[in-house]
Length: 171
Image (cartoon, rainbow, N blue to C red):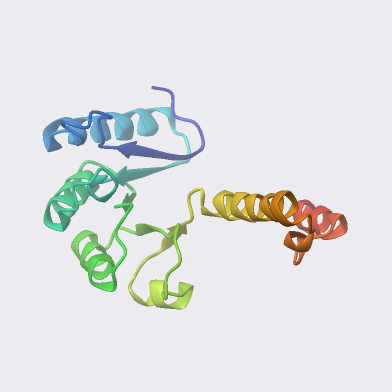
């Protein structure tokens, strides 16, 4: 496995609905192999260990924490349990893997703010496909309004071309 600069996540899901999570021993071995490959290549890569419990319908927080701790010990730089949502779950994961940083997925509407998340000890936030889903939701609502009402009200609040160009140029 050739490591390249960037970030790499080692997931513990199997893709098999009947056995959705790898056993911890084989998941840890994959993490160790990834760490060794990164170290051998000298690449500047952030290795993220993921406990997939909550997104494969196995919402077992103690098991997710055991997995994350094992991944930290096996060389993960950052730990991630996508699908945890409550303050209690987040705080438990942060405490369990400290001082390693925790990534939190926010792909849904929540009362938590970035300030709240930082106060819970999270050091990295990702949004997954939420921004794209938000854009597609606006697209679908606007298209539906045109198709059913013959109106263009769905374009309200749309960014103009100049704003988009400025944004994507980083100006």
